[in-house]
Length: 281
Length: 354
Ligand SMILES: Nc1ncnc2c1ncn2[C@@H]1O[C@H](COP(=O)(O)OP(=O)(O)OP(=O)(O)O)[C@@H](O)[C@H]1O
Ligand SMILES: [Mg+2]
Image (cartoon, rainbow over all chains, first blue to last red; front, side):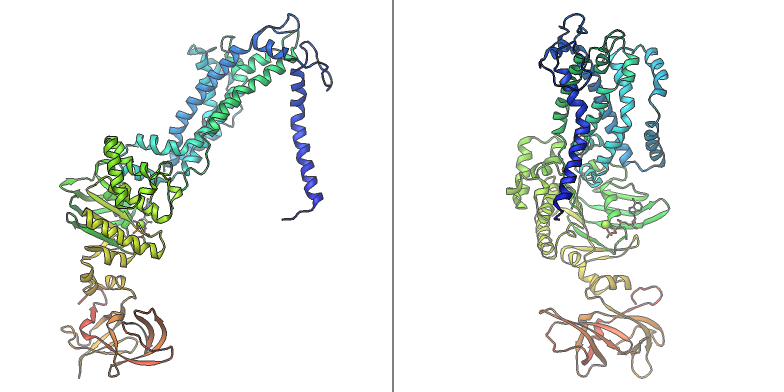
């Protein structure tokens, strides 16, 4: 196609505008994180001095009194990682098994159940806050990694199942039958055939689930009492009753993205496309 | 190797009866081809033998063991699927080694057996490739390799060649046959290609609508079909079938409903004025200036080795196949002789041969 020059330039301009629109707040926020702690920017301006003080102070709680919150977000990073990790394990293990059953099962009960899962997911999370708080406390799991990850697993499982089912649907049943005839048990079929072929799906689901847990705020704030605070809680903590530590808040926000990138990088290696090609004609 | 006995086997899918009571006895080391039109239940029967489909009624025995409720993995049967079903994430070698690995065979022995199978099927240079890096014919061979490394009691093939082009099909047909000669493992081979069935099998089972129409050696079925369905199904170009009536007044003839008068040597007993269906294969018709039937040529298809002619005689169309080259073109008229010794008769109602 040979579109006109104007057409292409205007498209490019639109794309640039959209990118700018999205990225502008981040850019400003990023500059804030590099500004001297205590400096509160009111309007977009380029700081006179660029410094990493906010980063070190957020990481180690080493900032000066009055202009720093004086706590380290390192434990929160670890908390977040543990909770998100447990959630990923829960969602992929349970989700994989359930998705397989939903994919291969042929009963109406299963179909109804599957749709119910997706519908339940549409209820506002707030409506679950009180009952979940009561349940988690009743089992003595409030302010624990396990408690929060159980809740996150419950929240993300439907999505994980839905995603994985899509991937498993694409694996021809003949492969399973061939494996059964080759002497595999049902568990061995799952282990040697379905799991490797659904690996990209598992990786995608793991990323979504990890992200959802990592940024989840409401349940994290209801269920934690300090010792299991996740990153979003710590970041929100920079905004206290008397003072808001903008620079550290910004620095902590940007640092919180690093573990995400690391996780996505490793998960991304499994997202190889076209893995099932050549199985059946 | 083992015998396979199929005794009154039935299969219903819900209220639909797909297999309606089938009895087949397969000898140790025999090559049996299952043929029949699409949807007649061939794959279903094969899948029941493999254990992929629950049996609704009857009994399947492999060797002396009833396998109705034995899981596929414990039946010691190998199957080659129509679409090959190769494990896409495993190399050719891993595909072939999979069953042995599950069985806990030692690494050394696995390697030996895979190499041997690869040698037989000329797959050795391809052992490290993934299925998606193979051509259709190579994939087909890997699927067979996966079956033969196991040295199973029984081989099942479900239309293994139907995804290949014509030339490759002929080549693979020969390879499978050669492989069978070498291994002599009991084999059940599903196809709806009758040439495949005729050329490869010791015995052919012709299925139709969930039942067995006839079972026998290829030429026996060809020459003595039990009924009209079998006569029409086996043979290409297809047999000519003409409903009509016998007349025995001055000389014995068969008059088709379309008005063709065909002289007979010995009509079936008590045939006078009775109705029936006459069958004559295209190659049992010869050009003969003194022949009783005249044919107006409509289509000629010379293939070099033989000539197929489609023509019209009175109100009937007739297919003829001549081994010799004939100089006929559409519009010509020719006189034909129908070999009276090769004429078959069928009952009009039951379709059975009389
Ligand atoms: N799982 C199933 N549920 C319901 N009906 C089925 C099922 N599997 C097969 N059938 C029906 O059973 C009949 C026989 O199917 P089958 O696959 O055995 O035929 P086939 O002889 O192998 O045909 P083809 O030559 O086309 O492969 C068909 O009418 C098919 O629709
Ligand atoms: Mg079939």
